[in-house]
Image 1 (tube, helix red, strand yellow):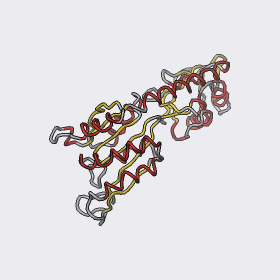
Image 2: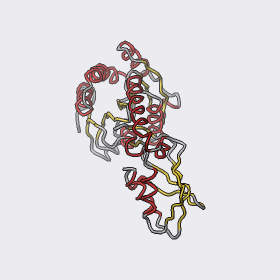
Image 3: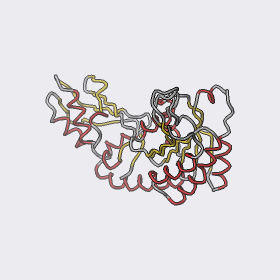
Image 4: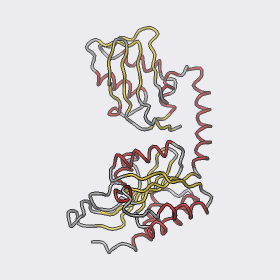
Length: 293
């Protein structure tokens, strides 16, 4: 399967479709089933004469599930009571979802080209690294960020191209948005530093969970929730997958980042699974933290 990211272009327009006391969730459900999308990620956002607009909330789709599906999609919604589909009706999108309207005779060729392009992009992205710093204190310039230099030195020596990806404040949405943008820009490795602790200002792992609910995490230290500044019961690091990008969420202290880097480089070279790799990274880091409480 060929996974692509939708970025911000997620609207789909159904032209030549009119409604007469139709059930909008039923319409959205028919679209979701046809495109193999989660039912809770497709919504009707606008209805006008001969036009229905839907919003697709999932960040990624499989090209094989959506390419050339115009006829099936229109047939599916025509079966919903209260919906009339005119001759010549069509499906449009300004983004990737425009492939829904690809003529059936062109689907196989389009998918073959897309798979080839995906392999080329993945090969190119695999050696590009973006480093993201998190935390309001870094954003405000209150402390010096020394992590980028450490990561650039180690990963450049290993043959990677390393760029500074920016600073995100203490916000799940802000961190997730920056990581998603960098992934869309073709960075195969994204390293975040900071925000993995147990305090109310630590949101990096939660931000990654928004992007990849199946991410792998490892506990570095455990605390009693509600004790002192701890609003969570553990300090965790994480590795997430986002399209062709692998995202590493590391602690903020530079000495801990330096401990993690050799393990990350070895894991990338060996193509180690993220569950095994996150535990390998955690092992040297646990020794730097206070004993578990």
